[in-house]
Image (cartoon, rainbow, N blue to C red; front, side):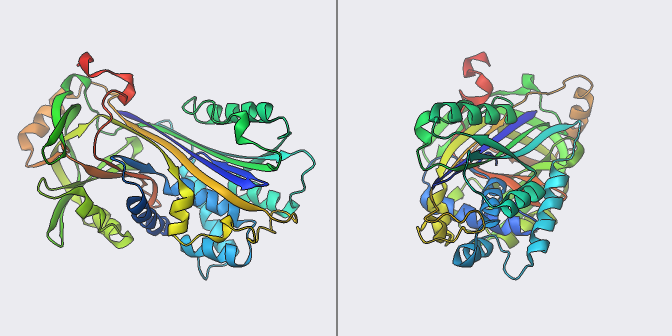
Length: 409
């Protein structure tokens, strides 16, 4: 099975536009940050399906942090759990994390690229440019934002290339105005195959319970495998957690499935960094019968609301201190939008030579993980523990999944 992940941030400043396609923060703090973001998302977003990127959010905040001072800086550090750390310690950990995640590996594709697009003649401090290049490997390019159409085409083309064509025509001429001076772009693209293959011929239509009394028919994938599984119970909420690793086991999809008599909202209320860490440490190897819907989740999120919920408010204030970026006055962030997409399907499956192993696994199966009702998921970098993507599936997007129509089954 192959999954493709693409994330996008669009941050608009008065005097700036900052964009981050992401889609992680240095060390274990990303798990705390991810839990906080999920709580904020849950309280503000009532959509059926949720998807966001802790990695992308933290990267864009890190890029802003490089030029922030005073209260503006302290709010970002507090949200990112960096209080008390020395500057060198904070970004040393980030550099190591990004280096590890971006390592070349034939089993998957993970592209991380950053760029700063500057208005010709606009003065940005050399130290800020140097720090971005040092910590984020950002390249610096000059454009004329007065020609909004050409600027939109130039940056959109770069984003399309970095995301392997998954995000096209990102900007239009309406996205830039006479006050636009700087665009920071971060693009992350991930594509990989499962360690244990799904088989397309075993996918069939099955009911998925969206909520009590309402079900929809979805393509359900099936697999017998040995993997990590855990049974948990908190405050009378019973649920299972399963790890589905990719090839080389550098990344994993973690699925959290409440019992059929438990609403997924009850599980959401309990999300915390210690709880997530306990899932990882307390799971054990089991032989499992897995059923997982083919799904695609895409969303565009107003991150400004989420950041306000996390007490990051100063960057949206005309009196915010971004003097580490420029000596220009009245520079503040007016808009933060994250666009992201995740697709789960059987692409890359290899049916040959696997059927015998599947038959053996079937005869030993004592555990089942049937995701035929709402569940939570997150994408984890196993070595660092960083959460790259996180979300909820309440209603699988059947027809959009990999462009296949259900009638093809």
